Length: 433
View 1 (cartoon, rainbow, N blue to C red):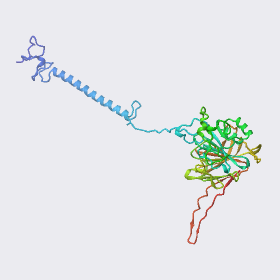
View 2: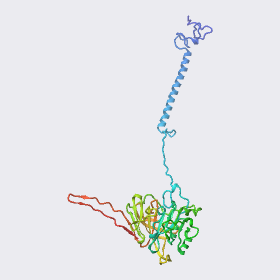
View 3: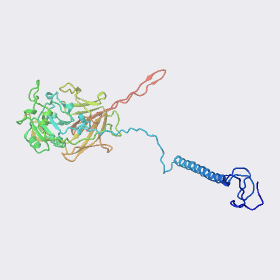
View 4: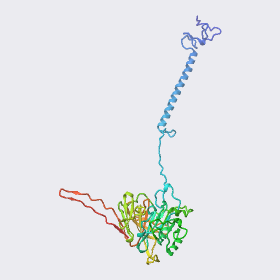
């Protein structure tokens, strides 16, 4: 029974009631007084404490979860906005970059070197005859450069220069002339193979920057050939490999003497140089004609194909016609009274270059024998050659150099009920001195 109005019994807290057999803090029956002593029903202090503790923990869990969600949202927004503090994840891609390979080229032709390696050897120049009886020649289509020079009696002779190719038969080999010094001096100390010469010319060669190989001197048997079917003085030939074997310590290639580009320079007119005519004489009436199937010029004499000993026709990628000052020197070349033709290789003069069926006119200029001539077009730009074999024609002043252009396409045909009219025109040759 509850004694509401009596004082607190000993051993009990003031204002509290006791239920027999149960501690106060563990009372769970309804009607248990609260701390004020009121007889209202409700949770105990332990339950309230538990509720407060549990409620606080729940609140922190909720707040922590919200904070995490907010933080994740901020990070996602920063990434999406391209923040500098984060990087976008880009799927890996595979790219292939092609670096152009460096191709070793032959210095005198601009073509790829055999086997990708420029031969470590000097140029070999061979003096070749060009009388009617000297023909057919051998090895000219394997030469890097061939120079045709005027000699006595309005004839011509050739200097064939080899570096990247090594033909086993070259000739026929004939005697040297005064223009050879100007041709050879620009070739970086070449080996020169010839069959003698008059003393004044031999003296010039002895003082020129060349390595002289006179086949008429002793000790030249290893580089002298006499093929069957030829008779003296047209029977002497040589082998370039054997010639290089005589200078094993010389491993320096020649320096370039031309500039090469696969495409002609701007301003070149397609079809403007399908042929070039250089009439040295009736013996050497030379024409070069463009041959599109082989992308080369083919050589002929007075309209007859110039065939070599192997049956092929003489061909070149470029023909450079330099009009040069010449004079008749005091030296007699033969018993008939033919005197030496001398060429002044230093100076300047007109030049006509044909390549790719196009003709480019301009000027050549050369300041010293050891430097090649520069070729400049009429518009002031350098003249470039097509990679390949080049023939240089040293035309004496007064020799008309004529280029031929392709005829223009026929004019459109106009048809009327009463008649049909077709018109066509041809381009006359261009002559340059």
